[in-house]
Structure formats: structure tokens, C-alpha cells
Image (cartoon, rainbow, N blue to C red; front, side):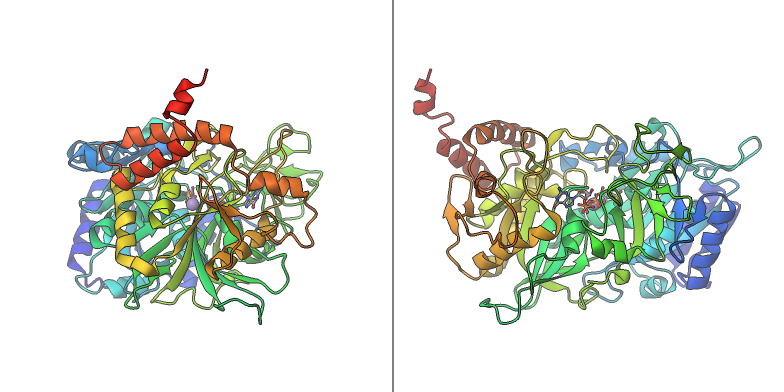
Length: 609
Ligand code: GTP
Ligand code: SPV
Ligand code: MN
């Protein structure tokens, strides 16, 4: 391939000199190239075909390489305060020296793939270009699904276009006495590095081949680096799904189709909400994106969003014909499954796919598995990688270069207690307060203990490329620019549990009932009560027709749990303290108001025994 771009060619030449690969392959993104790389992965033992699903493969990783590694993710800025207390900071000069040592000779015996890619529809004013250099063919084929990859992206770069250089190695060079293995990676956590230099900007990732650690267009570029760019340039890069919601024809709604963006932490329901199949007759949900939204004020003054990705990298466990039939249809062909179990008749399986597990499986580590084995057959963070346009409910505007206008922004988290099913913010600033104070239980999407409650502001805790306090201020500033056209803001929680640990709310397709209530609010209907924590649904205002749910449960889901909020206030205050002195004043006063409503710090409470 003749490369017209001198800076790109020079970076590739330098990288070849540093990493000493056996070969260099420029990816053109063609179907033929994709097939060749998949064949190569099969011959290396990394991929196995999935006969039940045409064009599909299953892949088993090294047990150390199953999720994002937050402890080994770094933001390197000249001033540590620019990364802020929620990120791991390292000195950029020292870190580059460390990384150059790691990358020296790192690709020995392997092919170096040059992967040009575009985040967003090629030619869209909201899109951005990147080039990933990787020694992993798994990354190359995954990037072809997840981004606009290959010749078209390279052409868009022209001879002098701006791109983010993204350097990746699995960190397991071949050599005498070092035979290849199906999933090469650095096996010690301390040998893995996912490093961002927002001031360049550039990304260097070493030692992991999995997901957000290695598909550098996703969390590294489209969130950490992009959030930094977005702050400087006046736009937003968010961990959000985008959906189109259409009420039944003839319904007394002022608008036909509305677009919503929603930020939930990793493994907290974005993919499921983005392609929800409504249980209420006549309602339609269509999917534009399930993980990342880039948003910018359009010429019409409204906030417009694009999905910078071209594929889904979705959580497999829990996905079934009942919970998410549209995802099940999306992954019937041309899908890469990672760390799922396989069945004797040539299909895949994971926990929750069917009510009863098959009698015999090969688990995600390639071992025999039978029901009652005492361990999951699929890894809890097992994932499917599939093209966006295979989703049966993909929205016709999913690749609209102008993006779609956003009417509502939704935040959420995995909260067994206290946080109501749905809450509408009183104002943009109050909405920012709800986003900034969001908490959620940790999940298998990151290495570490799952089920621990932590603050995860805007679902961006692991993904914000700069100081979280400055990020809150940027949201407030966006609100000032958008003025009356700013979207309305809601907060939802599908994950309330009863004393026995069972979910109180049925979730999934039934979440349409909550989306309908939001539409009622957008249409100006009087369905909310103003409370100390926000606008909560009036009794009976959430449509439960055809749903077998106890009205007492609905009341509990929509109530203000004073004891719980007292605990919540303590946690919020702690999280704000950690970000001082950069917490915007308006958020500090909203916390004071909340404290006041619950009598925290007032004389009444201090006087109590
Ligand atoms: P990332 O890809 O990690 O960013 O995750 P995500 O936010 O897209 O989460 P996803 O939709 O894949 O859901 C993660 C897990 O939560 C799956 O096991 C789902 O089955 C489960 N889940 C999603 N929506 C609901 C819901 O409404 N109720 C309940 N109880 N579980 C849900
Ligand atoms: C997440 O963890 O939020 C994901 C998966 O979407 S990963 O791409 O690994 O970040
Ligand atoms: Mn995600």
C-alpha cells in the first residue's frame, strides 16, 4: 500500500525499529483480509469456528487477561493535578522511558499490523481518526468490527491529516525457547500498562490483549483521550448509549421520535436498554449506540450525538431470548465470542442464556464442565463482538454524520437500596449533581472485587481523561451554552433488591414503562412530585398495565428512603472532599441543600439524642 502521509510513515518506521517485528502488514479493512486473519487465528489455535453461527469464532484468553485493569491504567500529564485524584498519574517523561524499554524488541517473531481507523462515520464533522499499531491479529479483526477500519480511514487521513497514534503490544515476543501460545500476553498484572498521554495526544498499551485494554479506539481513545480533547474544544465524550424512542402512532405525544442518551457504569445495562424490546404495545426503541456517545451543539442549538463505534462489544452472561432478543439476533453470525463456553453440538453458551444449562460443556478455559461444577462455564465478563448493522433494531440514523438531537440524558447505577427507580432532576445543575454523585456496585467488567459500592460519577470514573472536578465544571458550562435547548436529565436504577436478594423491578423490556414516564414528563404531564431528592413519580403514574407487580413494591421503588439517603449524603460528601478544591460551587451548594432537607448539620439534628 502506498502511504502518502509522511508523519504516519515516519511513526511506523520508528516503531518498527523499536519493536523489531518479523513483518509489517498495513490493514486495508477488506473482507478478504478479515477472512485471512481469522484463518490465521484458527491455525494459531486462538480461534475456533462456531459451526452453529456462520462466520463466527470463539476465543479463550489467558486467565490473567479477562477485563480492563484499572490499577494499570495511567494518565500522564505534566501536572499531576490535571489527571486528578480519581486517575493513576505518572510522569510522562519517566513513563515513556519505561515503556520504550518494554516495547524494545516486543514484537520479535510477530507481524506488526498498522490499523488505520475512524471513530464516527467517515467524513462526519464529529468523527476523529486514529492509527493503532498492534502485534495482535485478534485486535486487528476486532477493530474491523468495532471501528471504520482500513483503506477508507487511511484515505480520510490524506497526506497530512491529524490522527491519534495508538501503540499496542501483547508483550510476549517470540524467540528461541519462547513458542507461541493461543493467547499471548504479559501474565503478571505489574507487566501490563494502559497509558494515555493526553497532551500529545497518544496511547501506549502493553501486555494485555483484551477488550478496553487493547482495542484502543474504544475506552482509551473515544473516552479518555476524547474527553480531554472535548473539554478543550467545547464538546462531550461520554460513556453513553444512544436510543431512539417512538410512542404509539396517534398517542397524545408532542413529538414522534425522540433520542435519549444514557450513562450507566460498565455491565450496568447500556446494551440492554439500547436495544430494548418494549413490552408496552405500540412503543418502539431503536439503537444508535450501546457504549459511547460523542455530543456537540449543532447549528440548530440542540445537542447532537454520534456513536463513534461501528460494533458492539457486549457482555454475554445474562443475554437471552427473554432478556435481550435483539442482541441474540445480532450475534447469529459474523461474531467473535471471547471467554464463553462451547457446547458439544458446535454452539456457544453462557450463564443466563437458557433457563437450564446444557448437560455438558467446555468452559471458557477449555475444561470439561457439567452443571453443578461449582464455577461458571463462561467468564462473568465474557463478551461478543458483532457489527452494529446486524442489530435488527438499528436506527436508520445510526451513521448520520450530523448525529441525532438529544432530548433527554439518563444516568444510572447498580444500587440494591435507596436510589429510586426513576428521578427527574429539577434543573440542568441538579442533573449534573445527580450525575456527579452517582454510585454503583462494581462488576466483572474490571479486574477486582465485584459488588463493592463506589462513586462512579457519570459512569466515567475509569474513563475521564482529566480532573473529575473540572469535568463537572465542563458539564455545567455545556448547560450554559445549550440554554433552553439543554436536554432534560433523569436518574434510573433497575437494580433494587428485596431482603432475599431478588430484584424488585422486572427490568429489561419492562424498562419501557420508565421511558414512557419520562416522555410524559417531556410532554409536560403532571406525573411527578417534588421531593428532597428530585421529581419522583406520583403514585400510579408509571404504567404497570399487564404487569404483575404489587403496588406496595411500586411505592417502595419510588419512595424517599430517609435512612438510606443519610448514608448516601455521607458518601457523597466524602467523594466531593476528595475532589476539592475543584468541585464547582453550584454542586457544593446543592449538597448543602440536600443535607439541609434531611436535617444533616442543622440544629434540629444536633439537638437530637
Ligand atoms: P459495558 O459493555 O460493560 O459498558 O456494559 P453495559 O452497560 O452495556 O451492560 P449490559 O447491558 O451488557 O448489562 C450487563 C448485565 O446487566 C447483563 O448481565 C444484563 O443481563 C444485566 N442487566 C441489564 N439490564 C438489566 C435490567 O434492566 N435488570 C436487571 N436485573 N439486569 C439487567
Ligand atoms: C466497559 O467495561 O465499560 C466495556 C468493556 O464496555 S471494555 O471495552 O473492556 O471497556
Ligand atoms: Mn462500557
